[in-house]
Image (cartoon, rainbow, N blue to C red):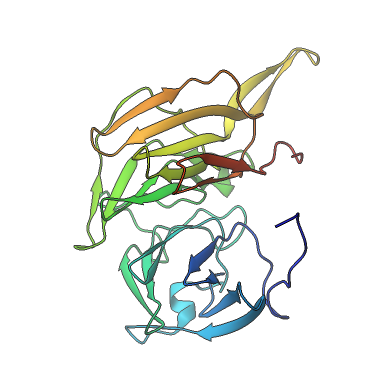
Length: 276
């Protein structure tokens, strides 16, 4: 490749693409937007098509996702299935705690935990969007992220520090105990699992309720961006603060990717008060 060039966007009539990952499987990219219709991009022909999926229990789709749109969810491919956790049906919404999976062969969804109308349940992760997640040792891990509280104002983000693992064989959640020097409460962090290092890496993020100083204005301001890096080891359940000589600028909503052949990790994009 000699540079960037545009490719065709999703089919006409598709909802806007907003904080929705493209899951790559067998030379195709699958775009789930909270609808029963899944958009598929063929990398060889650079064309889109649409697949119709259904729920295994026979329920109508809007019983699971009433607003027919989902953003800021965590998703990963595992053994011909796309697993999806959490997210929000609209910007500013409280969040969801549903874990579900799409069988790529049958195009049938299974719902494993959680409910569309969130209920208190300490045996599964709390509702959230913008969580960090990865798959290691046949488990789907979830940490950080946030739940909105619209009733408490625009900055009322309830951020998390917990770590949960979902066993992809037994379909059971476990809240992990952890130690070490880990990140503070935050959301919208970049993340990847480095298979060469056998650790999850997390960079940056945002906390809407953390006060920062504005010396030029002689005042304090709500909302703090981060530019620190942390590693999580699933073997010893320990965080470590990764100290580097240089680092990218402060940002949230960036993307990270690890090259499986070299172990090198890349960071792209993100934002900070509308920039980057």
